[in-house]
Length: 341
Image 1 (cartoon, rainbow, N blue to C red):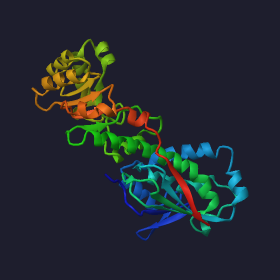
Image 2: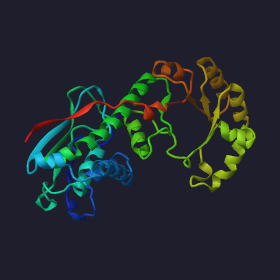
Image 3: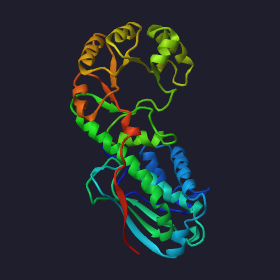
Image 4: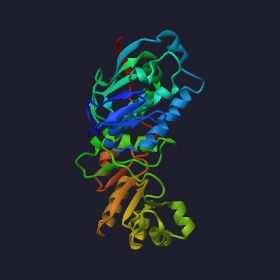
């Protein structure tokens, strides 16, 4: 699975950009048209990405411009490639373009001005979702050395983290390939990075569960206890659904940790069941019970490991919910290798 387009080039730090013959006026830190196209093509929310990147740049430039680079490489230009140090799946290259587009707001003296041309040209050499081997170049940057060095760590932080999630997801997706089951993420995401982390899951071949608390309902054990039982909880959520932004089409999933609870949920009209922390033999029994009802979807969750993913998928569940994709995936090792001045 690849997301985005290979060879997308953007110019960072411009005061204005041309697209279809029309000049796009610059606000603070404008995004180049190529960057906007890359984000939209990837299905990323532009405002979400800009907010995350600004937060990262605010951290790096909180105490002022990059004093080291300004003192040592001011006035110079450089070209560099982002290169994979290990095998994996790339994700987040459009985010790297945003880093450079917004960088001009944070640079002090010692860099070119927008009037002199773009500070840095950024070219994606592969598409997000591409499997790479050690030594593969995935992104090229060329331009003002202070800008390149100032953006290097912020850019790598995003791309290595998101690529790590995509790489881990690909391992899970490969493990269950051919079973009919799909790997999904959870809401166990880092604050402020949910949309990007879930995008990385898609790059790796997984699917997203709910993005927040309002786009789907998940009746968990505490809801059941508060409502007075599974049936009561399902009735309450169904009654409230028409008043939600999703409306009557709101998906209602019910968490069950025993076959008895599965039967109770099905009898209450639930048709999406989360099978929580069930050993494989119990999962098989729960699946057999649920498949007697039309239109039921089943999701295994809790205690899942890559080593037993295929065995779990073979029980007949539709989804495997893997929180570790977003909260525990190690970063993919990528570095910026300089090609010369």
